[in-house]
Image (cartoon, rainbow, N blue to C red):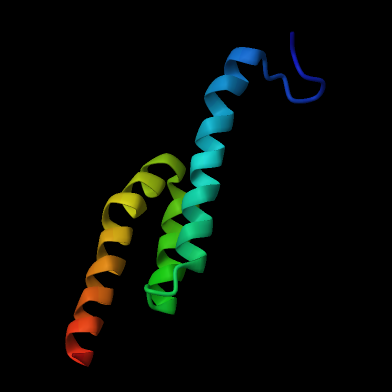
Length: 79
């Protein structure tokens, strides 16, 4: 069965929809993460949009870790 106007079958949707959901989750997380400075959020958003799957994986591996480290550094400086 093919969707009207999209030419996507069920198999393609099973592959494409999780990847799109993963990309949008990463993009949303990067945009709303207050632990990352504004310019870095913009750069991560552009990376995720330019290279959807690899950018999302890179953000979840490196971007979240960098945000956690910046929180730890900030907490150490305040104590």
